[in-house]
Amino acid sequence: MSFRENFRLRLMGRLGKIIFWFWHKSVRMTLIGDEEYQKIRKERKPVIFLVWHGRIFLVPYFFRRRKIMPLISPSEDGEIAAQIMARWGYKILRGSGSHSMVEPWKEMVRELRSGGQVIIVPDGPKGPDRKVKLGGIKLAQQTGAYLVPFSFSTSKKKILNSWDHFLMFLPFSRVVAIYGKPFMVDPDLSGDKLEKECLRIEQILIKLDYKADKFFS
Image (cartoon, rainbow, N blue to C red; front, side, top):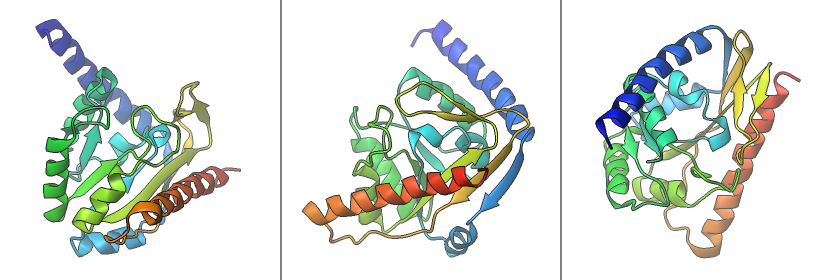
């Protein structure tokens, strides 16, 4: 990366953090369903958050200052997100299914085995939309981490014409942030049974989106 390009991305990261802060501070936030999550965190249990790509707009601000490790795509868009989130105390990790995951995988395993938290986008940086890939599930199997679905919705929506139907909230709107029930994956599941578990988790996340959207209907 050239000096000019590096400077441009760093500048966008600084400006992005300021814009995100004011944008998020303008909304009224309601939090639902975090009791069980808080309980397992008090016990220092490892957590993998599952958030669809189309519902990540709230994530950088909402989970700030918790020293969570997000897996962020090595794309240019990912670099901007990484620049913003690094300034809020996240443990930035770059990687995706279209690149080698050997080293990022080791980092996530190490983080979870030490009682940390990781954010995974289960439909990846390119989709298909709301189709769970196996990476996060296998990571939970290997580490014994709890999977915690997460979503949000808003009273004033802006949905982009993108593959993931990316959801944004408008300034001065109402926002609901919603946790799903934490659960673990049987480490012995494989083959067809693991595929069925994948589909079950997919439905959990889809229903959580629906629950969030219904909050304002």
